[in-house]
Image (cartoon, rainbow, N blue to C red):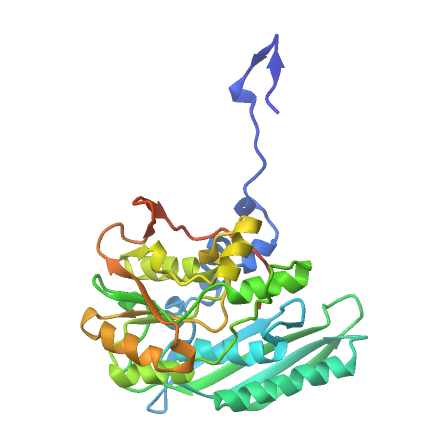
Length: 356
């Protein structure tokens, strides 16, 4: 509160709480896929590991090894609760890493799986997760080839954490990375957004939205293969998980030094997601997805790629939602239904933490 002197407010005495990003400890927002996550990478991890491969900051690294191009990715899964409508920790851990590899244009091949189990967790829960991972791996056409298990004392975990890493082959002619976005590119999303985040929210908080909302978790490698069969010159692919579609588009805009202009009414938001977000004061563009991708495609191939996506089960709801532009580099804006324009900024953290 400002200091009062003889009934006069002195603005010079005003104080405000320190911004979240000025804290000297890790906060939940550091794991949310927004600006705090970006700062953690830029200020801690990138300087510590500093190399050209890491500097690309893509969903997976593309490596040359023995004359072969490999995509390599790793991710940890700490979702709460362990099971939710449409999926659970097991299939999420497989699909998430499969999709990270696919966003480089790779055909995923092998995964590793590392479990951290908390003392006291029921073995039936562990078995259920393992079986769902096996089924998801079979559906995605990958093999879980190696792994590890650790146990921590009761109270020092949250039931089960899983880390998966994966490798896949990248065709020689494919070069998919966020730096390749170009003005004129069509921006396409593969289907309705926000389902995963709302599904997690509904079971975690005990909320009901009139209809059950199921997570969209699914493997996307076959969809990417169908898109690449149309043209190998797809510029960018991203799966908009933490931070939602807004975070992914901002990351692409900043990496490529271009702008993105969206048509807000074109963005496919299911009624259940729109209603839930309206009730809770959330923006669907920031809600997590686990079975969607956003693509930047040259305008000459956009219609054909969109048609190929719509012919695939995982892309049946594919929609062109905007374009990449030379204006406002590094910024995402949306044309609203009222004729105005709003800035779609990078979120500070995640609206709902622990969604994957």
